Image 1 (cartoon, helix red, strand yellow):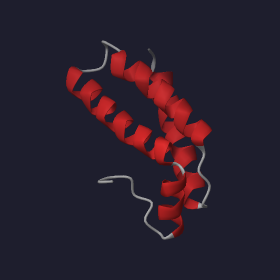
Image 2: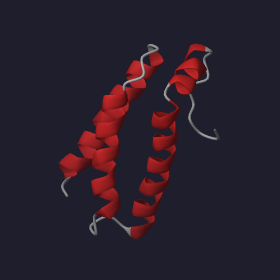
Image 3: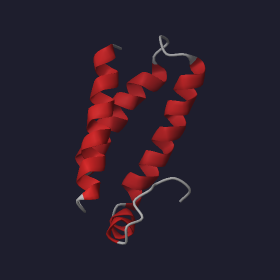
Length: 85
């Protein structure tokens, strides 16, 4: 695990967010972010509390990924927030 893993996860999440704002659901970017986040959630170099938070965030992101079309419809109505599904 390296600092590069953090950067990759953040960049893919930004890519997903930017495309979501323009009405596109980029499952690939989300999957790449989840892969990198998975590495972080398992890394012993990351404090346990942070690993737990990353795991919770991954769970929410998986819900977004699995809801695909539902999430796109929320975006088109201007409600793109994924918290509290």
